[in-house]
Amino acid sequence: MNQEFLYVIMIIMLGYVLRRLRVLKESDGEVISKIIFKITLPALVLVTFDSVKIETSLILIPVMVFIFGIMTALLGVLFFKNEKRELKGSFLMLSGFNVGLFAFPLVHAIWGVKGLTYFSMFDVGTSFTVFGIAYILGSYFSEEGLGLKPVEILKRLSKSVPLMTYIIASILNYSHIHLPDLIIHVAKTISGANMPLSLLLLGLYLNFKVDKQLIKPMLKFLTFRYGLGLIVGLALYFFLPYGQMFRSTMLIGLLLPCAASALTFAVEFNYSTTRLIATISNITILISIVILYIFANFIG
Image (cartoon, rainbow, N blue to C red; front, side, top):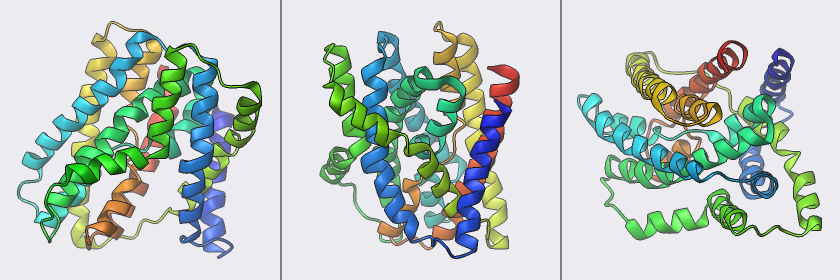
């Protein structure tokens, strides 16, 4: 397990070094991220859902994730009530989780296909949280005070290739319908690129520059995010009447890094805090790597 984590760290650092040497640029990350979200990740989902049986209890995972997202939003509005409007919106947009890029490579290394199945269901709930709750709050607290647009939110959800793939793959699984072997073999080959591309992308975006006056609110956000995630995660881990993998998914899932989409929303809503959002996302990646390492080696 330690060797697997070493490989993960090395690939992330490779992405960082390639950027520093200017072999790759941050702008290249846009192309890589599109390949991941629209090709390799959907392929991985198809392969995973085709080879496992989804237990009925797994339907509860996205439901609980979405409920947690609502709770985080309500508490976040109160917790950050004294912050400036734009800063408050920035923090609330960061309420989602980075599952596809960050969690999948590590989860696959620790638990294999079984783990991917559980975290795929977690990602379904995350998609609704990110493109629903986070998007609404980001729009509402922007300087322009953009109105809520339900139709726009539904369009975003329908255009999310991973989310649509999750839904289709789940329907096929529950209907006991298997895709042709040729499609699965091709998807399996393509999905093999998901882990290295995801980790390279994380390294490509590593950047920890932040204005000194934003350090205090940033620490406040990190305390709120991981404090709430840890409290709720531990409660679910010890009291849910389900198996170890289910409870581990909820505990670890609520301690994952911030969703990468927050940066996209910040640009769309003309926020001036894009660097802060990127820095917080990078810091949460490092924190979550440590959490996963500890869990894999000493708890799970």
